[in-house]
Amino acid sequence: MADAKKAATADGGESYEGFTEAETAAMKDRAKEIKKNRRGGPKTDPVAELLEKIAEMPESDRTIAGRLHTLITEAAPELSPRLWYGMPAYAAGAKNGKGGKIVCFVQAADKFGSRYLTLGFNDAAHLDDGTMWPTAFAVADLTPAHEKTVTELVKKAMS
Image 1 (cartoon, rainbow, N blue to C red):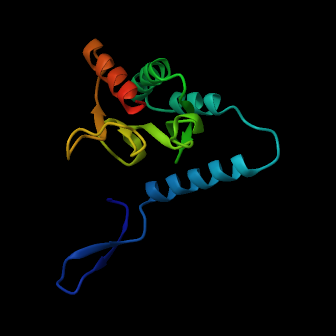
Image 2: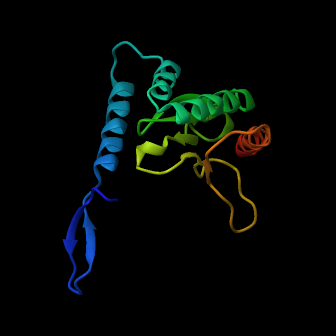
């Protein structure tokens, strides 16, 4: 949150007011996505938009995000690729009880100033394992073992 507005607190420390530029941009992206889906005009191709977003990423993220896209769509072809807050995301259909909710998403490292790309899962994903389980994974590289893990996670998320 380095670019957030800062204000002094009563004890002399700092607190953050408002949203960072990256957070504001993500909210604007989401507002555009909602407006686009509500309009009665010509529909855009959500897969093409998602692939375009991946193509805009820096090379290291682009390579990983492209491979994740392939792995996710092969593991769960029932997921609908689309943009969500300006990020590649994969939504479940109403048929499987998830009602169009985002199951997983890919967040480029530069989206919020992170040092790595993230593969995240929302609460619609059935990854529950006891009382604590991971819902986001830093992805610095995709080895065959990592690809197998991603495929298993996506399949479990849809179970």
